Every structure is written in C-alpha cells, then in structure tokens.
Amino acid sequence: MSMAGNLRKVTSLGSVNGLRKMARLARRGKRVDLSHPARSPLGSSVVNCVAYENGARVPVGGDLGDLVATVEQVRKSGGGFVWLGLHEPTVREFAGIADLFDLHPLAVEDAIEAHQRPKLERYGETLFAVFKTVCYVDHEELTATSEVVNTGEIMVFVGQDFAITVRHGRHGSLGPLREELEADPHQLAKGPAAVLHAVADHVVDDYLNVIDAVQTDIEQVETDVFAENGARADPGRIYQLKRELLELKRAVVPLGRPLQDLATRPIRVVEPEIQAYFRDVSDHLLRATEQIAAFDELLNSILQAHLAQVTVAQNEDMRKITAWAAIVAVPTMVCGVYGMNFEHMPELQWRYGYGMVIGVISLACLVLYRGFRRNGWL
Image 1 (cartoon, rainbow, N blue to C red):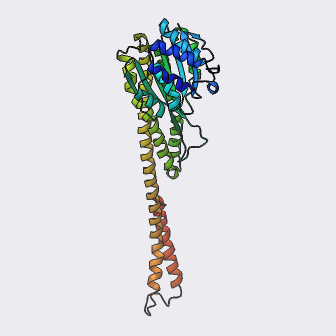
Image 2: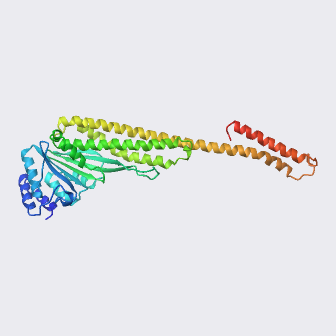
Image 3: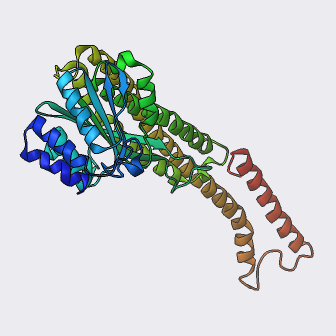
C-alpha cells in the first residue's frame, strides 16, 4: 500500500489512535531512509524530514512508522516539532501529509498548484504563508530577449508542533538554511515560528542580492544610452529590463502586508520574541521595495532620454540634409536657367561667360557651406 493510501486512513481515526494505526501499517513495508528524497516512502518530493527537541536535532528512523512515532512523541512531549521539506509534491504525495497534520484543503490546493500571490492566511491553529522566490539569471550580454529574473515559490505551513515547507522552482534550496538553523540551537528552540522567520529572511535576502545584480544591468544600459552613439542603442534592452523588473516587483511588493502582520499582529503560533525578528525582515523588504521603485523611475528616465537622443539625432540628420539641399540648389537653379535654350540670354556669346558662371556657382556654394558649418548644421 502506498504512503498516501496509508496516511489517508488517519482521517477515519482519532489523533493518537490514528498515528498508532499509521505506524502499524507503515511497518509492514520496507525500511528506507527518510533523509534521502529518492528513497523516501513519503514520495520523491520529500527533500528532508527532521524532528527537533529543544533546538537539537532528533534523528528520524528509517521508515514511515518511525516518522509517525516521532510525530506522536513530539505531540505528547509538547517541547519539539517536526520540519518536513517538500519539492513540487503531487496531489497523491501530499494527501497523506495533509491528513496527518490536519491541513486545510484550500491551503493544500494552493501549495500543490503554486503560482500564488505572496500572502499570509490562518486556518484554525495552522498558519499558511506564501513567499515568491527570485534568482538572478547570469548572462554574458543583456539583449532584448535576455531572461534576467527567474521566480519560484515557497509555501510554509506552521503549527504548534510542525513546520512544512513546500518549494516550487529550480532555485531557492533550503538545505543551507536548515544547516544554519541547526548551528544555532537557541534560535531553533523557539519552535516552528523560527523556521518561518528563517525562510522569510532567506527569501528577502535573495531579493536584495537580485536587486544588486539588476542594478549592474541598469547601470550598463545607462552607460550605453549616454555614450557618444547612445541614439543607436537598442531600446529593446530597456523594455526587457522593465519587464523583468515588473516580475521582481510582483514578487516583492505584495509580501509587505504579510510581514507586517507577522511583526505586529498577535498570532498564536508566533511568539512575541519572534515577532521582533520579523520586524527586521520587514525593514529589509521595505528597502527592497524602495529600490525597485527607484529602478523603475530610473528606467523610465533612461527610456525618455534615449527617445530624446533619437529625436535629436533625427533633427541633426534633417539639418544636414537641408543644408546640403540648399547648397545643391544654387547650381541647380543657375544651370536650370541656362538650360532653357533661349537665343537671347546674357553672356552666351561672351568668351569668358562659362568660366564666370562656374566661378559664381562655386563661390555661392562655398559661402553657404561656411555659413552652415559656422551654425553647426554641417
């Protein structure tokens, strides 16, 4: 029987009895290592599953029964919690987990389908948070089709004795974050809310790193636009940066309200001591939001400056064309007059008439040329 099928049986049983029944069902299967995603009976989506007691890591046994027993022990002791990490779980893989931890169906649906807006919701005793993760896409040269920002999602379920992180996307791994938390048992001893804070802090730090990288691209575009041949710069790069900045803005700006709620509103699963940490994260997010707004205004200014340069360049070209047209008009007019083939025209029979006309034409053209050069038209 699959793990999802085993976990679904919990719904028809009491909390403790259901866990014990789950353990008996699980022990019938083969023992596997929960810490290895490829061998986890919870499904290939499981990245890690660890229990913590007073900030210290408690090893979880090698099969599903040991996991259920650990959950039961944590709930009885009331002094620890379980941290389960998932990556793009399927409906079948997540169904049993939702039953085991009594997760709300609407939150489960959001966690599986992804593509959610950053938000914070409470379902009974469970807190559900959605974070948009971002990463900077390296490129040798920015073009009109370059991908600059790539986004993903991290959903976090927080209860009194558990924290479940669900990650979508190829970036934003929480492995290093887990190691940092385990190196600080005092912080980890504050419970599942410490995991929520660590995830929020990790996500916002990534925002700041991506913003710094995007700033480099903006500075490069700005340099190219204001270079000597800036009018010939590709405006598609500016539009592409604005589009990527908009994607970054959609990830960063909506997170302000959830972090403000975590920092100020009383929430049962978030201790007041942890709320002070959320205020610090909220300050960092505010900085990121302000930088994005400044970048947006800067790109607008760069685009307007580029359009102005194009207009100026076109005017320069038109002035040059006009100046040369005026110079060419002199010989055209004179030659046109003498090309009418009338019998009685001045200087037609004069020996030096041809040379005089050529001299007058040349002198007139030279005077016009010098005048246009003096005025900056040529």
